[in-house]
Image 1: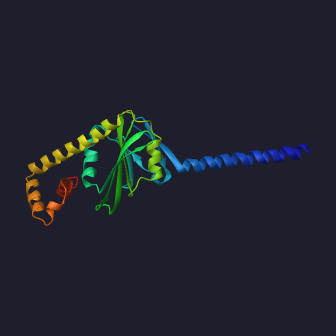
Image 2: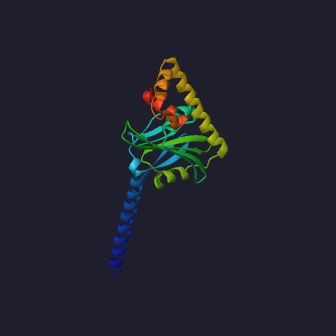
Image 3: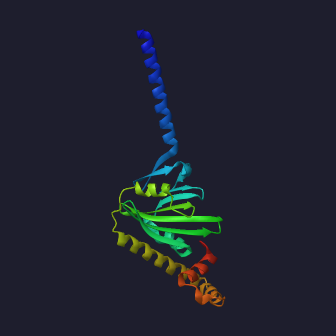
Length: 209
């Protein structure tokens, strides 16, 4: 009788261990962790398989995360000018600015979220036209922002202005901005468009040039 009881217990323990290993394997497939600029990010399974290079994680043209402290204007400037939708919001203890636009070069909607974690600013880019729960959780699970919220948005706006000035200066040096602006102003319904739309249409003729 004791042998039977021991045998049954051994089987139960074996089954229990198999179950634990299975659950662990499933969990490991759902998420993986990466570290950028000393901040840990939990990557959902749909965005796994990317590569880390120069403090940037990227999966094809579908998803990316990067610390943008060193060159914020370069990263946020183009998307701010291209935006079709913009929103400031709070996720957990993080100030966030969200942009969304249709990108004719990849033939899909692209979203970008800029947020503060610790004393740094990060950019998450993904294919889609909304902030999904997966993106929210990634932001929420990073260390709280140590940057004042007003200061965060001020830094973003300042970087966008710098980007506009640099791009305008480059186009002027190429002798093309004035030509493009004159051509733009001669088009129908020009007066109905806002300045940002004007700037966007001119810049898009030199996409990442």
